Every structure is written in C-alpha cells, then in structure tokens.
Image (cartoon, rainbow, N blue to C red; front, side, top):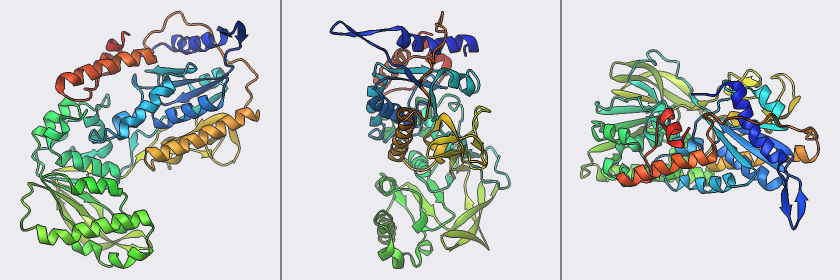
Length: 477
C-alpha cells in the first residue's frame, strides 16, 4: 500500500523542485519562486488553520501537508457528528487554503513508517507536527477489556466511516447503554444512539451504521460522571439538542442537584446558563413524567465513578465533592448496561523516535508551540513546532484549535522572519520518476466527487469510502 522510502521521498521533493526551478513572469520580469519550505504533518483542523496563517503571512514560502490517510480534514471528517453539518462548513475554508498555489497535499504518507522526522527536517526549513490524538485514555478497572466495553472514540469513528473502524460492530441488541464520561463526544454518542434513524438517513452517517442503528434495541442511555452538575463538561448547545430530541425523555436524579441552586449567583455566565438549563429541565420532569410516553430515555448521572465491569452491568462508586475533586465513598451503585462506552478523553502517541514526547501526558513537550529538545530543559529544537491536541492535549472545540494553531503559526513565522530559524540553505531533493500511491489534492478531489455522487443516490450529502485500497483505486492510483 505504501511507497518504498526512496520513491516516497523523491515524490515529495519533486513538488519542491517544481517550486524551486519554476519562474513566474509578471510584465516580462522574472519573479523568483518561493524559497522557504515548511512541512505540516497532519491534515486536520490544526494543520489547515496553521497552513492558512503561514501562507497569508509569508509571501515566499511553500507549505506541504502530509497525512497518513488518503483523505484530509481529520476530526472534521471523522469526529464531528453527522447531524452537525454546520460545523463541517469549516471545510470550505480549508479548501480555499488548499487552492493556494504554494500549498501541496500528500496523503497516504505516514510519519515514522514511510518517512522519518529527521528526513523531513533535512528537506524543510521548519516542520510543524499536528497529527492529533488517535488513542483513548483507559479507566484501569476490572474487566475493562470485555467485548461489551468500547471506546466512544471508536464508536464515533465507526458511524463516521474512519478506515479501520468499519468492522467495529457494536452490540446494540440490549436495552441499556452506559457512557462513562460527560464531554461533548459522550453526548454525541448518546444522541446518535437515541436519534431517529429516519432523521440520520439525511446525514452522512455511513450506510452500515444506519443499518445497525435501524436494528438497535437500545431504549435508555446513561451518561455517567465522577463529579457534579457544576463540573459537567458538555456544552449548552449539546444539552439543548438532547432536550429537544424527538421521542426522547431526559431524566435527572434530583439528589444530584442538592445545593446546586445556591451556587448560581457566583458562576461565570456560560456555566450559569448551562446550570440554569439543567435545573429548568429538572423542574419540568416531575410534571411531565406521568404524561410523557417517549420510548427512549436519556439519563445523566452525576457523582458516580466506574469501579468494575460486570455481566450486563457496571459497578459505580458513589463520590462526593471536595474542592471540585471527586472523592470516593463506601457506597456502591449497580447500573444495568449491555453496552458500555468509555469516553474519558483522547491521547496522542509518539510516532517517531525523534519527537520529544510526554508518554504520561500523551502530548509533545513544548513551550508555546516550540518543541523542546528534551523533557528536562527549556531548550527548544529550532525549526520544530507542534499545534493542536498533539501539543495541548485533547481540550476544546474547533474554535479552540483554530486559535491555538494560529498562535503557533505566528510563532513559526516570527521565528523565520527574525532568522531564529535559518532559511538560507536550499531545501530540495532529486526529482521523482514516478508518483506511486501518494495522494495529491487532485486525487482527493476524485475521491470527494465519488463520495458525493454515491450520497446523491441515497439522498444524503455523501457516502464515505471507508476502505483505503478503494480510496486509492477511485483516486486512480
């Protein structure tokens, strides 16, 4: 599937040579082509936002983006819920960046496998790592590896068509699902489980996921959090969507909200609005419960920590708060659950030995986006940068990622402009004899059009191709 390293390197450097050797003419005067070369590893939101800033700031640069998948956009394509198409509109901005004459996309190229960080640094003046977080944090409790325990990340990737997850086959034959964690990813998973399949058919949810969801017997989804309502990690937008979900009743535990109203006056405005919405929903449930005939239920549960996985259940430790920290008590609850989704956060991995990586924190050691030479010093590795979740940890939404990527891109540009990063040497390699199976932007456009056409036949925005070999075939590789 992948190119031999020598062919791959020449493939990437051929494009560099094209920029190096060509002359642009304006009114009969030759204009030198760009001389500064920057490589971004990862074609997700952080990578594209950084590329946008760099190309706008540095007039004489080329930005090459390499991506391990044949397709771009990362979590915008594979993480955003299918029923949130407005969030995916940022792809329009990314497309404009990709149309820049000094932008190149190289898909189906894996750092640490097809090409090393050292080899990239030999060919580029600066390298920016933005390959994200593709692993899960674990609970470290008994029986966590049972077949009925899945990560919410994998579940989201399954219905979003991430290559490699199409065969996840979650067991939806039971009545109850417990989602451990209360972030937006957890709420997205709950909403997909409780939504009408007819409504989802109008989205880009994969057909195999729609088929499985149409046979689902799930009637209730628990959303379990260690701490209280005042520490809930989901946003007000996500909660509003759950409260408005047709044929779904939200049921709160009144005991979880003891003393919560007393804190309202001192809360920051976003937290106050979210808490007020929860309290409003709680106050309405007693009057509507007797008349509500909803077939499905959404049940947020606070102050409970996972203790052990049992047969068709999860054992929970009742907690109490001390300075916003969940402290376990001696009380134990048992929650019925035929399927359990773990949603306690993502983490990044170290894909190349040349990266100064914090294994415990799951991110790259850095100082304001500049990668450190080692974990103990503050000495930066000049010309090497990191942005997105790989540098910060998995926090925030796309807007957070955008601001962070712009910030690191500004740092990179400032370092080049001030000569902190040496750009005097020529960074180019030998011209390639063949392209092999490296996916360029024009190849991706073939894949994109094929997906859109497949979606039109099904009455949806697109039907994603989920097999890498099929993607490459459609691309003409």
